[in-house]
Amino acid sequence: MNFSHLTEKKTELENYRNDGEGLPSALVKNLEDWFRVELTYTSNAIEGNTLTRSETALVVEKGLTVGGKSIQEHLEASNHAYALDWVRELAAQPDAVPSENELLQLHALILRGIDDQHAGRYRDVTVMISGSSVLLPNPFKVPELMEEFIQWLASSTNLHPVELAAQAHYRFVTIHPFIDGNGRTARLLMNLILISHGYPPAIISKRDRLAYIKSLEKAQLGGEQDDYLKIIAKAVDRSLDIYLKAIKGEDLAPVDDHQELFKIGAIAKASEETVPTIRYWTKEGLLTVAELTASNYALYAPETLSRIKQIQELKKERFTLSEIKERLLSDTE
Image 1: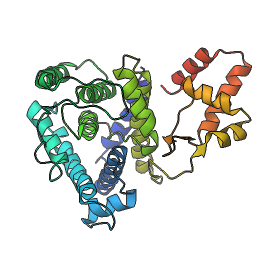
Image 2: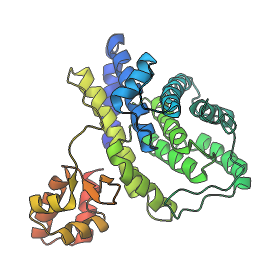
Image 3: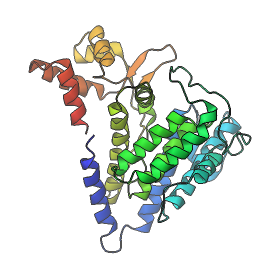
């Protein structure tokens, strides 16, 4: 995958950082505070935490409790924010490649007060991913696999930083070294690598949750990693845009906004396509489901209509569906 567009934006950001006295300290603090809440909210939401963005901010910034929410959900928020602070400190060191002990410490911070028995300790039992057919490594192989992972991490200096971060995340969750907290640890590890290379942290939005999980599963079952890498690149690109917009004085918008999601019937009607066609294009990977309801109904984001329009225009030019998919994927690189 081509990451040159991300390199260009990162270079633009570096130019601002190195221009004269650098970025104003107030701006840097504002951005770090903003990302602290947003990363905590989205990463925990992916794992099922029900705190809203504003409630997460109250817990993280004010240390307040939210009525009707569990102690565990509060701890997940405060622990993640503290772990992110620790990651930023580690990323600022000359050699930011984490050691095995540092990864164990990171995991311990995430599960502190939630599951102290397993915090910072490799699993010694077989675990399965709910709703997935992915087979995870035998627990007795975990220490050896993690030792190999750390060696790979230290030696993969030839990879683009975004690809390195994405691959580290993928390899880590595929080992699944802990009973719980693997996803949050993997995303923080990914951001440790990004920050240490001068990139802002990548936020996997709640809206991308389903596509993110499915893309990981696809790769773990032997499929291509293109969909997964595209999601990570999109997240990095979005964070770079947030930094650049803030520097230029433009307003920051939440990564995971509250735009209305639409059922397949509404999308079909608005695009003047049939429901079976929308369903087929989704199955073929041309369209992405944003969320699934409790009743397993697919919901689509508003930008799906723009994607459908692209497909319709390419079909008029007599492109095949495989050619259209290739075109759409290349447009996102």
